[in-house]
Length: 330
Image (cartoon, rainbow, N blue to C red; front, side, top):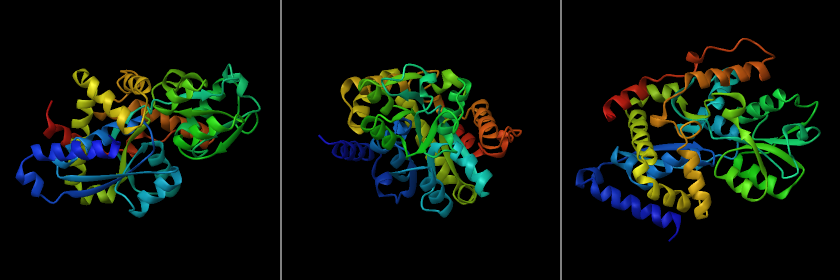
């Protein structure tokens, strides 16, 4: 059975359980732009299981090819919610003056430093190409920091090559050995290792707490659509709780295999990473303010020449999240 067929059947069954009133209600459309990867698991599961529909929403997702498309689309109103590395939100505020707010956490992005099989250590990246989505965002900065801690400076000791999002970088690493390393999250990092590439460590292990993915929106949209945003957060967290409940392991692994088109062993390993307490999906999608401060410190150090980091409170508004969680219950 195809993924789309399975998702459709799950959706129909879930909506049927909600009763006539839920089925007849006109759902609110919410468009979500995201990158490929395991961080989107609660969104995909919420769609397939009808949880968003239960909360009166019709969530449509679209994968972005890169950070520029994501940022420009959010600013122009091409979609309502960005589910991606929150560093993009910081960049929109700091470089474009956009009134963006982070409204929910997610995870550390579960990123690891993945290198070609002939690279035995970080030092071996000297003189090589390091590929990134965009050179001034999120995991590119993480990669630069990791390499800097090992004595390698971008532009001097290695070349930074912008190529696009994780699926694109995975394919390039697979096809072209000259692309020596990149930051990569599951399931792509797992597939890369299976092909013989090396994992030199997770971002969290190498640089400490890090707020990777989250949800961010334009402030004016949030203010005008508070109820919609809170229903989205509520449905997301409800699905996340189902995802992280050990009693649902078999169902979640099967869903990962089907939705991401993965072999059973890779799906099982992806589940382990998604539910890892230190580096996986954060319970209730709580925002790590400490992790966000580290993101800001990285931006200040690498992009702003060691300037003083901006205060984290400038970039988030958790009032929508708090109201959503309060009505969701334990």
